[in-house]
Every structure is written in structure tokens, then in C-alpha cells.
Image 1 (spheres, rainbow, N blue to C red):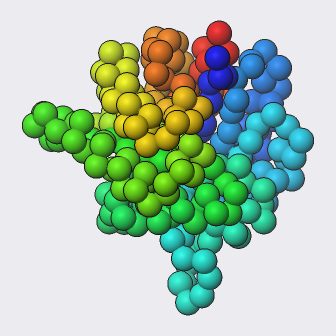
Image 2: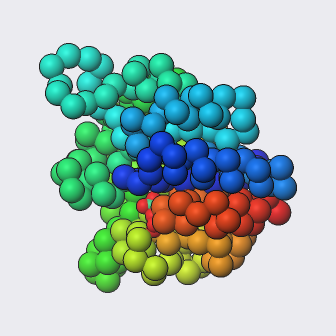
Length: 248
Ligand code: PGA
């Protein structure tokens, strides 16, 4: 069985001192855990991650990337620039990017291409809004979002990580029930299997108010291979408890 993957999405939180305190506390508890783990941090802190985490079992990553290689794109950061900081992961298509920055399925798919060609693992987020769930569109929405990425990335698809993040569960304290999460994860798994013979190795993470209390029941589902953790990743104790649940 592949080991589970727990990824912290720090979003726009942190500071030099707060980051180093948090990492020190996480690292000092990590020997008790055996899952894979990473933190995705704001871009200005990637150099700090490279210094503090080099050689550690905790990997690091970014939260977004440009769809361009280089050039006149003020404010953008390319995948090859991320690679200069030895990032292992890059979140792509988070619902906050789709919502606040108007990122389309096509843009997300081309960002995934850039990340893969830089040798970085994209964590591709998909998920339905509350209205879409209420209208019975969950399956259609997540399949459409994933299909765009599969279409653009062909056989490389086995190199991605997928995160199912129902938009209504992000930062709200509402969590998908383990059954709701499993149902969608099973659909995504089928879709990946139809696209790649290597689909079994693709980790499908759950994200959306996963915390120290609900992590074990979510992680016990057969198709939940880990978690993408927002709020709870800012507390070393909570993050370590989730990592411990993923290590059983
Ligand atoms: P949350 O965020 O755990 O705070 O709900 C998850 C995410 O947005 O990745």
C-alpha cells in the first residue's frame, strides 16, 4: 500500500519567524509519523524552506504558478523559477484561484503542463460549489475539471496528485462526510484509470476543513490517499495529529 500524503496549504499566512517556529515544532514531532508530508507556502518563503528543510522528510511546494515560461508577465513566477528552490509540489487550480482570479479549466490544464515539464508534481484541485452539489452536478463538475487536465497532459497524468476539495467545505468548518468524500474519490479514480494504466499510483487527497478530529475517518476511506490541509496546517499540533492519523 502506498503511504499517505499530507500537504499543508498555508495560503497567504506566515512570516519569517512564525514559519521557522512552526517548522521546528512540526519537525520535532515527525519521527512519530511515517506518512509523506509537505508544506505549500507563499512564494517569498521558498528560499527559507530550502534552507530550513533541506535533507528533512518534510517536502515543500508552491501554491500557484504561471502558465508562461518567461517574458513580459509582470508579477508572474514560472515553474523553472520554482525549480530553482527545489520545490517538490505545486498546487494548481485551487478553488480560490479559480474563484478570485477567474482561472478556467484550460488555464489550469496548461499550468499543470508547465509544472510537469519542470519536474515538479502538480497537486490539481477539483471540487463543486454548494449550488452545484444541491443541483446534483457534483460528478459532472469534478469530471469536467479533471478531464481538461487529462486531455492536455496525456500519459504524464500518472505523475500528478489530485485533490478533491468541495468548495463548500473550504475554510467553513463544514466537512464532507467520509462517505461523500469516498464517493467522489471513487469517481475520480475511475476517470484516472480510464486515462492511464498507472492510475493506481496517483494520490487523491481530500481537502476542506480536514482537522485533527475528523482526519482519521476521512483517511480510512479506501480511495482517500491523504489530505490537503488549510487552517489546521497552521498549528503544529493539529498538523502532526493529522500526520499521525495518516500513518496508521
Ligand atoms: P481548509 O482549506 O482546510 O482551511 O478548509 C483547505 C484548502 O483550501 O486547501
